[in-house]
Image (tube, each protein chain N blue to C red):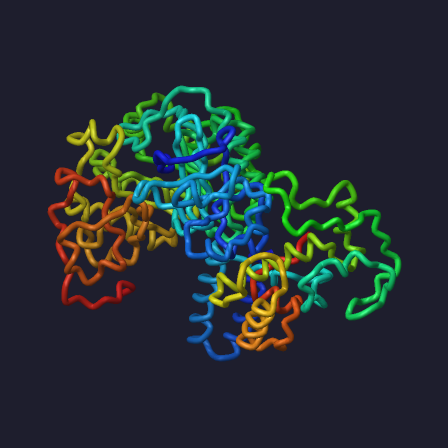
Length: 396
Length: 190
C-alpha cells in the first residue's frame, strides 16, 4: 500500500522535497505557503502565467518539458502515463533517484499515512509484509505531509506495519492531524497489542475530534487468533488492548479478515464480539486482499465467498439484530446473498480497484466495490456474474 | 460539540414527535437514533472563508500602477479609508520585474510584521499585487478571462471581476470586497 512512484525528469532540486501541486485555484485560495508548492504549468493556464506569477517563491514547477520552466528554477516533468498527478496532490520529488512519489491524492477516496514497516504480528494473509527496520523518520515526514493535505479531506487512514510501534511518534502524528485536519476522520489500523502490554491507551488519546481505532480480531479462541497472526499470546494482548482502548474512551472498530479458518468460526466470533465488546462502534468483515503473504498461503486461506454465505449471513444477522453496525468489505455483490447487499461497502481504494469483463453487463456495478486489481483467477469467486433484471434498490 | 448539537436537535424532535402521536414518536425515535450515530461521522461545515477579517483590499479597483501607494501624506485621500496612525517604516520599493531567485519575492524586508498586523488598514504594493494575482487566478480557474495573471488590475481583469460579481448576485463594481473574495474562494489571510 505504498504510495505509487515513478521515474521522472527533473532539474534544479537540491534534495528530497515534499510539495503540494498547485493549480491556479490553490494559488487563489492561499491555504498553503507558496514555498511548499509547485506550480502546475502543464495546463493551458500556462499562457496566463506571467513572469510576475512564476517569480513568486514557488518550490518548483510541474511542467511537460524543461523549456516551460522559468530559467534557473527547479522543475519536474512526469512521463506520460507514468504517474497521475493532479492539482491538489502532494508529491515527493527525489532527485537522487530521479523519482516522484505521490503521497496524497486530492481525488482519492482512501488516502493513507504509512506509519512504519515494522510490525509485532506476522499475519498469514498480510498484504503488507513487515520489515524490521528503523523508520522513525517517517513521523516527521508524515507531519510534513499532513500540513500539505486539503483541510476538507473527509478521511485518512494511519496504517503500517503496526503504528503503535512509533510510540510517542504516533501521538505526535495524531496531534498534528488534530491541528491541521480537525475535520478529517482519522482511522488508525492497529492490532491493539501494545495497549495490552503496559503502554496506556490514554497515551494515544490525543485530542483529535474524530479518531477511531480499527483493531483486527480473528477468533473467539486464542489458538486460532494466534495462528492467524503468527504470534503466541497475541489474542490475550489484543483483548486487553480492546478493553484498554474502551477505558480510554476511544472509538473502536473490529476488523475480521475472512480467510478460511476464520470463516469456520465466524458465527462464534460474532457472538464473542457482542458478549465481550458490546462497546465497539462498528464491525467490518473483510474479503482477503490477494497480495503479500496471502499469495503464499492461498490453499490455507482461500474460501470462495459463495461458500461463506451461510456463516456470513448468520454473523451479520446476529450482530445487526443486536444493534452493532456491520459492514462487508472487499466482497463483490454477486457473491453475496441479496439480503447482505445493504451491508456491502465500496471499500477497495480506487487506485487498486477494478472490475472483470463479466461486470460489463452488470446492472449494479455502480453500487459494487468490484475486485482488487491484483486478483487472479484462483482468487476469483465462481459466482462472479453480471446481475440483471433486478430491482436496483439495495436497501430492502 | 457536534454531538451535543445533534442530541439537542434530537431531543427537540422527540418532543415534537410525542405531540404528533405514537407512530410518529416511534419514527422520530428511530431518526433520533440515526442522528446520534451519524453525529460521529458528521462533518462540521466550515465558516465562510473570510469572517471578521479586515479587508484592506476592498477599495482597490482601478490601480494598474502601484506607485501611488507609496504616498502616505494624505491619510484620507481618494477612495482610501482613513489610516491616521499607521506610519510605515518601510518604503515600498516595488520593482515591476522582480529577480527570479526564489528568495527575493515578496521583498518585504524586516518590517514585514507591522505591515500585516491587524491594525494596518492598507495593503503594501506587494500585498496588493499578490491579492490581485490571486483574484486573477481564481477568476481564471472559474472560467473567466482576466488576461495575464500578473497582479495588475487591468481593464480585462476589471471586466472579468464585474462579470463574476454579476453572475453571483454581487454589486458589479470590480472591487475586491470580502463578499467577492468569499465567492471566489480567495482567503484574506496575511
